[in-house]
Image 1 (tube, rainbow, N blue to C red):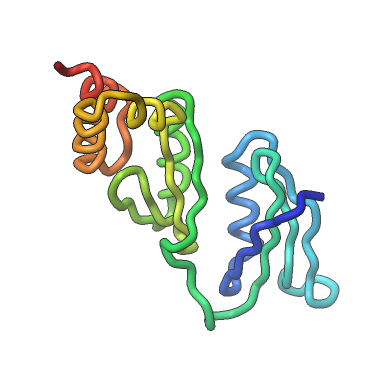
Image 2 (cartoon, rainbow, N blue to C red):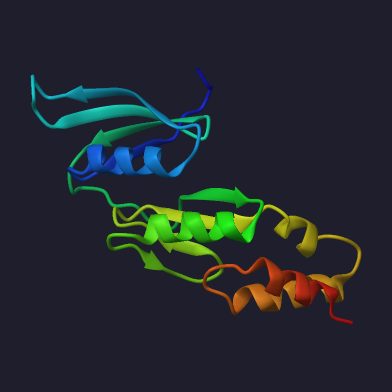
Amino acid sequence: MQKITPFLWFDGNLEEAVNLYVSIFPGSRVMSMNRQGPGGPVFSATFQLAGTTFMGLNGGPQFKFTEAISMFIACDTQAEIDRYWDQLLAGGGAPSQCGWLKDRFGLSWQVVPSMLGELLGGSDPARSQRVMQALMKMVKLDIRGLRDAAEKP
């Protein structure tokens, strides 16, 4: 078991969320679903997404997700960005800025190219600034647009 496990609080839709997340990320699985009595609603669940273990609780409406915590997805290709973006927005999610979105459960995600740190880093501050300016204009991140900004003189 990993030392630190994210624990997510849902408002009655934990089973639906877990099933969606497990269907989206390769290498994912439901480890346990604990129900309130035989055939009752799911109270808690443990699941893995792409090898990371999460726990979830159907805790009720007292607490909501905020952007203060988000799930960061490092993507190697534009096709991967597009796939995660579309699947996480499906059914009522909301896009934001700079690769952020909220899924239909209110959980925030960052869908980001894995090479973004490389484009923003380095010894050329003008290059970093161009990439950051391009990034700030995007909703869903576009690898080609970010690379073009990095390569401009």
